[in-house]
Image (cartoon, rainbow, N blue to C red):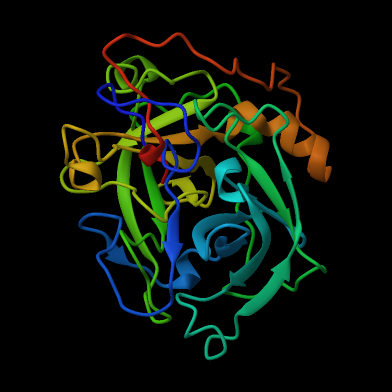
Amino acid sequence: MHISKQTLSASVVGSILLIVLCRIGSSAGYAIGQAKFGNIENFPYQVMLIGKQLWRKRILCGGTLLDRRWILTAGHCTMGVTHFDVYLGTRSVAATEQLGGLALRSNKFIVHERFHPETAANDIALVKLPADIEFTSRIRPAALPIRHSMDQFTGKSVVASGWGAIVEMTNSDAMQYTELKVISNAECNEEYDVVTDGVMCAKGLKDETVCTGDSGGPLVLKGTQLLVGITSFGPANGESGGGCERTNIPGGFTRVTYYLDWIESKIGSQPHHHQQQQQQQHHPQHRQHHIYRDDNLI
């Protein structure tokens, strides 16, 4: 999802979010610049979601396993989707059987009641699996940051992972990951004007970023499986060009600590004591030099 200061408009399908249309066929470039290929054993919480839309073919998103039944993803990953093919415990579609992974189908998901695709507000959703799953060395849930609910994580190293591809993907495309650093919302606000309390931003030191197809995927604290963000938006291909190659531009993530109460209210997860407002304004005040557009969507 991309919302640069140079570009901003009001149509949903091309705007803020980082979704990629999938045609499992010819390959294309990867979304995470200078990323490394990851072993699923190191990312057992990582989920691949391939959504079937009414008006499109398929879309690719990531997700994070929360428990035996629920997956956390971005709200914009559900737009127009009738069902998801869900892949767990695998580094690629082709390797699912070999690695003992799971391939399930789900048509049940919950989107935040105040999700607004034009501003990326409340970009969060939950996908419910059709049955409880068994955990293995390659399938394990991430931890929610319940004890860190007041932490902004500014300056902390984080890791983003996913299968994002710029145009298309193949059955054998492997998961990648990259290290980023969390920046303050004030700094991120210099680049985007949709930064609210429910948003976290992170950027790479060199050529690392998230991009098309990484939407909905996890952002965890480096060296842990503590989930702090959901991939939401990034630099757009606007008049200024560059798009995902503009890796000095931060990516935007849904801030998980802001939505702990919302998550608990839907899935009944472990109780926590930090209470706060769980919804943002639909229309943040936009600066005149920042135009929001549809092709910002990851």
